[in-house]
Length: 224
Ligand SMILES: *[C@@H]1O[C@H](CO)[C@@H](O)[C@H](O)[C@H]1NC(C)=O
Ligand SMILES: *[C@@H]1O[C@H](CO)[C@@H](O)[C@H](O)[C@H]1NC(C)=O
Ligand SMILES: *[C@@H]1O[C@H](CO)[C@@H](O)[C@H](O)[C@H]1NC(C)=O
Image 1 (cartoon, protein in one colour):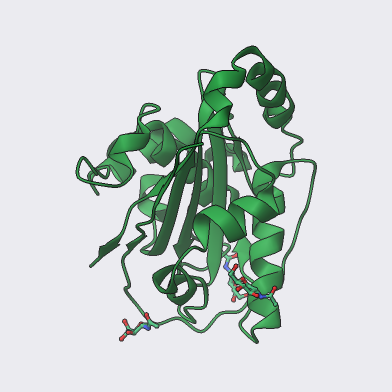
Image 2: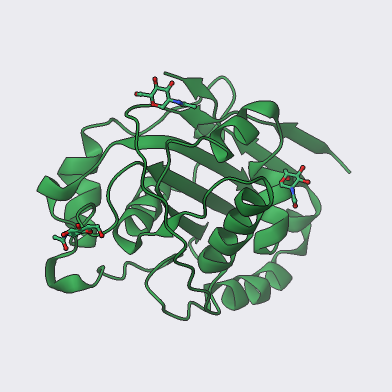
């Protein structure tokens, strides 16, 4: 079986922040589970638990959608990343996040894999594969986090995205009407909603067993 694993991570580090938040919500949603795993790991490492911001998480899902299912664009020689202007021009409006409430992104983790795994495996086997990702995870400047996961056309490949920010929880990524617009397919954290896409994906994997035999994992690394 061919196994190709290439890891890159994207990080941008900006302003200092002091807020700590211990707000944790877990529902039957792989993105919420990923945030719970991530926060448990930070706490065990004596780093603050991060506020799960649904506006930021919805933006993480739009970030995934910008790759249009193209795993090759996540890492390797064809690596691309969405333009920074996309946050204000498309990601925020798609989610109903007020553009004036966008806060600096202090770290990004992105991974893509042909096989669907659960949140704790996605964390340890996809997103935490190298030193750089640990550096991003334990960065004390983060105050909040948003996670998203989505398959492409309801199937493989599966993208996982975590965005970190140093914004204040009650005044950053603020949503018009208080709720993020749900944009299917895909799941995002912090909205306290059950997202069953993972189950649909498990079923769809059975339709293409050949596709799921090859484990391909890619990520993108970029130091600002
Ligand atoms: C945290 O932010 C400060 C101020 O912008 C910066 O100097 C520092 O390098 C950041 N720390 C980390 C670990 O990124
Ligand atoms: C936190 O995650 C890292 C990367 O997966 C792992 O090496 C470490 O053992 C984890 N720590 C705890 C306490 O689970
Ligand atoms: C946000 O939270 C801070 C600290 O809890 C508080 O001082 C501030 O008044 C809050 N702002 C709003 C707009 O709720």
